[in-house]
Length: 70
Image (cartoon, rainbow, N blue to C red):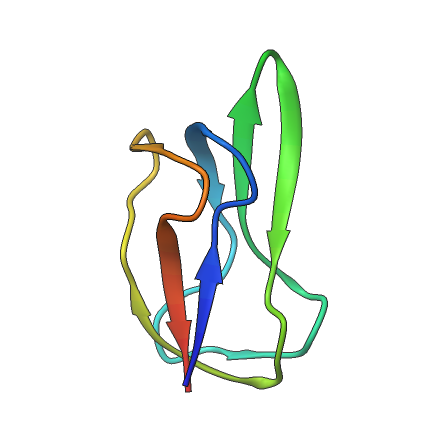
């Protein structure tokens, strides 16, 4: 299992992947908004999105888990 973590603090602007969906390494799982910039958060491994830990509009800190990839 791999954890997709926030690279910086910000608001979850958009969830790109859905639970149960296949993702590839480098594919965006979510997009954060911080200081009026959009920051894509990619998966670091191929796999299936087992669980999303955040919802659109949530605030996350650097290192917070966004999703679990199995």
